[in-house]
Length: 87
Picture 1 (cartoon, helix red, strand yellow):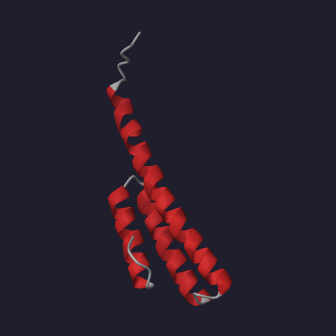
Picture 2: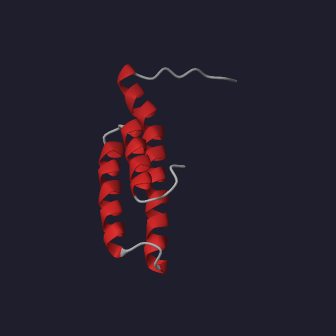
């Protein structure tokens, strides 16, 4: 038997924002993991790693405030700035 649930209107923005936050958070985490690996094996200088990580922190602020598009754009810009393909 199917049941229909009606949600109060004030819950809709919370429900619709959650997947976007999860997506940009995962995108940032994937690139951070790649940077961590590259600095560990010596493919990236520590100074470059530090700057790229700071840029990703800015993307994380966009992501946390629900601006998924701005966060994704910041990640793409960061990737390009440091010579990584934009994915």
